[in-house]
Image 1 (tube, rainbow, N blue to C red):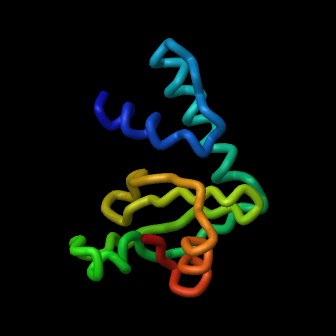
Image 2: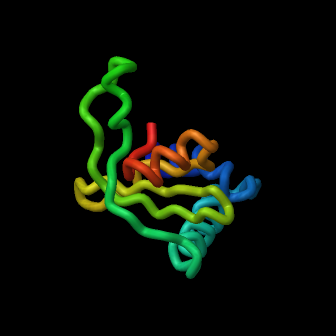
Length: 106
């Protein structure tokens, strides 16, 4: 249940989903996530999340897969640990450059 709430909080880049019913929100979120992943303009690349974190006092970077659409600027990151959804966001220009040059964000 908590994991679902976390996913829904991160869904702002999927055009706010405002259903009051939790099941409808989850269903709509999963639908939009699927559309993002299956979009032919979405690129899939192996990389990391948080490799720049050492300078900010974070732990080790998280290896995984970025699912990035340059048209929308949306990136979804799946951690290699069981290929679990980890986070999703709309990337700013600096994050886009980091992803393009280093296969990493944050």
